[in-house]
Length: 359
Image 1 (cartoon, rainbow, N blue to C red):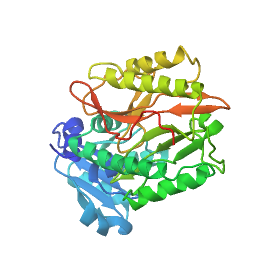
Image 2 (cartoon, rainbow, N blue to C red):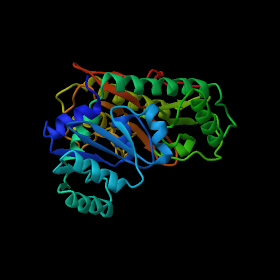
Image 3 (tube, rainbow, N blue to C red):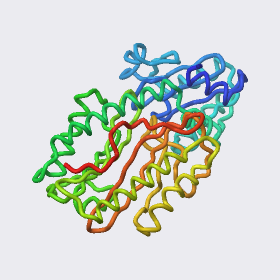
Image 4 (tube, one colour):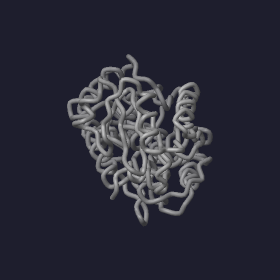
């Protein structure tokens, strides 16, 4: 398979040697070159690609960056202008969705001086999105590696949770373990909530103490080589009530039904409806977020399992399946896997058990 810079060139420039794409976004630059920096630019033409970086990053990029020639600049604008002029470029696509207005106007003026036109529409953004929404086998392997760390961390923390521990302490333990296992960073801020705090779907770990009879919900993920994982599990400490068991089983039923329904050709919002219908009848108004979101180079990507998203599901998409029930002031339950869409359905990239666990 061609590398992402080559695929971007084919998709957007279509062999026209007078066209180029200038990528400023740090996320997109790293996606295309596998090199992270706080500043810089990537110029893509049909003849080649140049990763422009300042003194802080240029040397490291010569060892680590892929798919582009590294150029050390003193003035980014001048270096871009010289490359545009030297390569006879007449049109330069810019990232209209993410580029600040003032910076976009600076490049527009610069290209005019070089005899080129700045294209300030969504063509470049859409082309990159089309690449990123379908994960290559290489990208899937990176996401799976991040998830292996996450699964291991979940197994580890289960041996630490007991009555008397605090949410905050357990979150720190979890995060430290993932870093020790090789995670470059957390995929997002860890959620570790117990008891009544579990009804806050994005609750923040606090000094709240875990007690017998509590549900504990952990939403966690690791970042590895730029790729993210995302997993949620809910378990009980000591015992469960009949209400807790019924809520858990309802969420699990919705989760499994959605997973079984995913296949290419369906609309994303149809999967959300399957899970939502299972929850809304017995527990109306308790499932207030979308069923899932894309995961990859960012923790929230495209597409989404929600009522608005009519994107057609395709093989290679990685989307979470995370229904939940949140009963204010009492407890909450969420179960989340990452699903890889295959030719005839999907498979979960998450290995941790989903059956109701009572510690």
